Length: 208
Image (cartoon, rainbow, N blue to C red):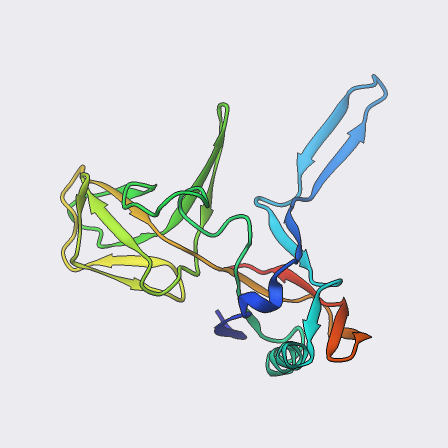
């Protein structure tokens, strides 16, 4: 990814951030009273607001330095979604069977990490482009695999030898969201001696 720094916004600087997934759709009310609804985006784009966070002076300086090093909106960075950052539920433990990775064909060696979201009969497969280094575990037909490498900048898993035709591949992992600041400024207000409140600092997900 061009214009991206492989560094995570320190968790302590995001503690208390408010936000979540955002979708874009168009809703048109027809003359009959019915509605025509269409998705404008193919997937959600997560947004967070750091405004309201209270930081010690040293932490505020760290956030300011992180912002300046990213050039404001210029360079992306990793952000841990406080709600969704594992291949399993946050209360669970990562396992190699958590998510489908693909089906072997005897030739293909590279597979993209994805996370699948299901509710009722509907489902969505989300590309995971920023897995956490050292967190990925993989299984082939339910057996732990070791002969693979992970590109931590793209989320592509590459096997040393192509999995056999029909082999079921699964994976478990932690991941970050590729993000950037959503404005070329951050603002602080003095709350008390040695304590500052962030009044404006927005973060938005970018394409992985």
